[in-house]
Image (cartoon, rainbow, N blue to C red; front, side):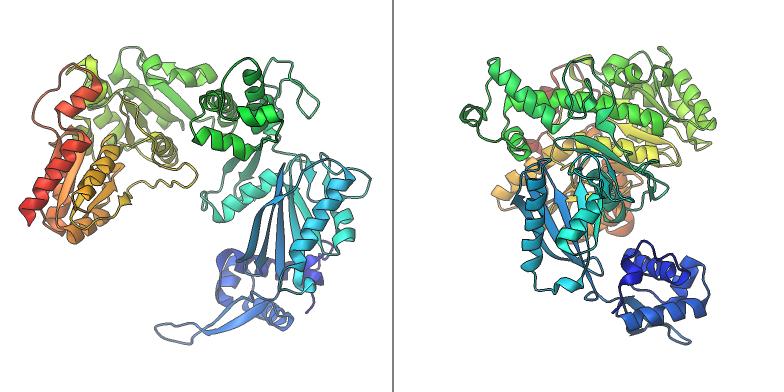
Length: 629
């Protein structure tokens, strides 16, 4: 097998370049016919046929036989030969290494994580790195000559094209990639760790399908990977992404880059560690005290573990870092997404849009106590290419401004986002005049209006992001009361119009939205203790409703109980009842605010009074299950 054309960056022959593109196509898209490759690469069938034939001879491509078609001549399916070659990946962290080997199709063969390693800018550390890589390769049941290349992630300033690392292991004029090749005798590619992670997320991660991405990597340091129109942005010398070294603070803390006041000095893992030591010496308590006193090494995993164990000092510092990081990210958004504007109606302190105002005063508009006018302004801004977020209390957004929302935003289907806060009975002491329990019903009647009602902080952020990406009017409903965070920010995926099954069950389905999702999860636990298996659905999108998920639940459990912090008239309960009437008629029991107004009182007590708590949800569901039997 010849690998010269594949590994040589100097092979710029037309044949060599086209073969690489064909292999890249199969890596990204999987098995395909010659015709499909021709269409994607805009090449003739004879040319692609010849190139694929040569790649077959080299052992890179396999013929998987004829494709099943309804008629006519059946084309052959071709794909990559997984055992034709392998790639090793090396991720260098401050205190450990992660190594993996992938076959030629990109499937993982073996992963070894958390290999002890201390990253130091010394020749000894470089030699130790090579030793670890060699040990990993020698342990594999794969001949060394079958490994086509090794890709190494390195933090700091890396020029992947020239093979230089200027922040770490820069001991001589030769490129680091060349030095490593001489030590390991395998083709080496080096890349900045954050750019590699960004590209990995772009290809196979949570942002798959997006073309413009800012990937923020916060570990001991702070960096960003930039992808624009599906292409990694490197900058002129390959040094783009040095986000952590923006001059951000007026402090005297020296960054490892040699400057003072870098964002990284107040918004990174190293900042968390440094601040923890400082606060501990000043007298603060922490569960890491014994390690600090003993002079033991504290890694980022120790700090994260302390936060998960609710170490108040670590959490306090993390909140400060999060605030600093948020301000930095806000600056990035101002650069990369300047069309976003925010409007408020004299409630910026309560709705928290004042945070945006402080960061971008030129993109914030306070329209005063004139909500209808604010909606009209938002409509006008959207026609000028802006993405306006108009924010006020739900009572004013959906109630007072309804006519303008309907006629000026809904009717022309403009790209306006309405951030309606303080919705529902949990506004508490503000009383009936401010407790908007009718907003979902009102917004559901507007053709083309999308309605999102997130259940926790993670989902709220995802809903806002989804609203920005969505073209058309969106009504986002937010409560006032703090809610537990049950979604995992690292894995959570939000899709407009697609509900989420949080818990499986066969006896009854609790269909919940917003604040009531968590209460329904607790109710399901209470029911389980009584032998009743409750399914729980999180319907974060009221419109368009996920009728497929709801009808499936209706068919499989035979009973639905809807739970919402909203009137039982026209809200989630009404939408679900309408859906199952058409697809799978089953009993639908609605829990919400009955045909009455709210009144003033502490939020938690009001929720209990109106039956919007786990205990009442469980009791109502149990009664319904009994009646079903």
